[in-house]
Image 1 (cartoon, rainbow, N blue to C red):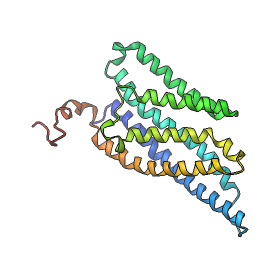
Image 2 (image 1 turned 180 degrees about the vertical axis):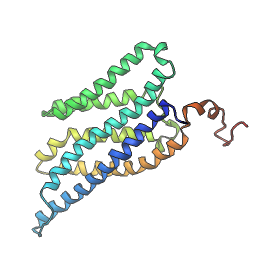
Image 3 (image 1 turned 60 degrees about the horizontal axis):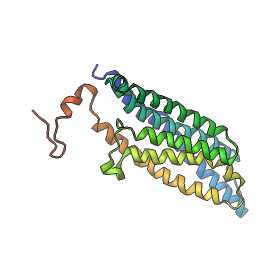
Image 4 (image 1 turned 135 degrees about the vertical axis):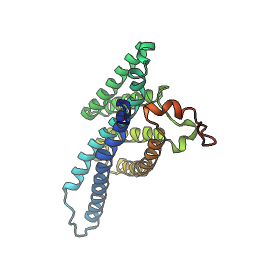
Length: 234
């Protein structure tokens, strides 16, 4: 078999995105469109055939999807960090840092769970901030490949932005339903339209990155290649 255990773990992030993430995204976009059309038809007095459940289904799936996106981010970051820790002997060199990073992963997950449970605006803000800070701090570790010199086409930076948008979307859900002037609803629509465009871009950028990641047993040879002139040693 050409793939090692490390290589299978690299495939976990894109596999989950394809099997769970993007199908859910399609359903959420469809329900969002139905909810929007239904609301406009009711406001204008037109005949409406869209079921009332479309709004509640959009909310339910959207909340699940936000947690899926955060989970996918943690899986992707965890691959870079813990493959170095376990498979490349990083833990023996910096045990305290990797123990702290493990606690940070756990704290980020707990903060996300508490964000879903929080009702008061203050606590929603606190737990959303803690969840976002956890993702950013984990993503800033040296093991994570960020493509900073090409940040505008970086799978990492797009992923971090999407994760922040999903956390923010969860945090403002109660405000959307309490705001009679629909200001928060409009913010939600604008930000998630941007998020949809970024998700589409992520499909291309993620596929590109998979082409660039060598198998674990090929890394030593691939590292000797000249990427500027696109040649490798014979």
